[in-house]
Amino acid sequence: MERDDPPERKLDKLAALLAPASPEDGALLAELLSLPTEGRFPPLQLMPQRKKEKTFVSLEGFLFGATKRN
Image (cartoon, rainbow, N blue to C red; front, side, top):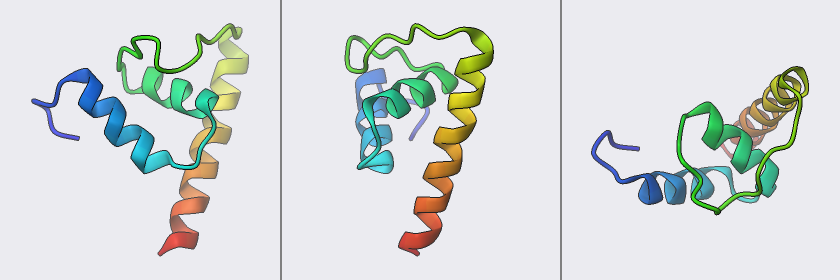
């Protein structure tokens, strides 16, 4: 992602990077990156501790998947 990319372009890049991740993973990581989701991902109705746990699981899955691809 580039600093000058508009939010929609950043979300496109995030979705491409995460493919084939779940919409919830996209929502969690977009929120972590402070990207407005503009209705692209489902709203997260999670308690803060649960959101933190799910974010770590999502990041772990992404990193594990990235190591398998390379």
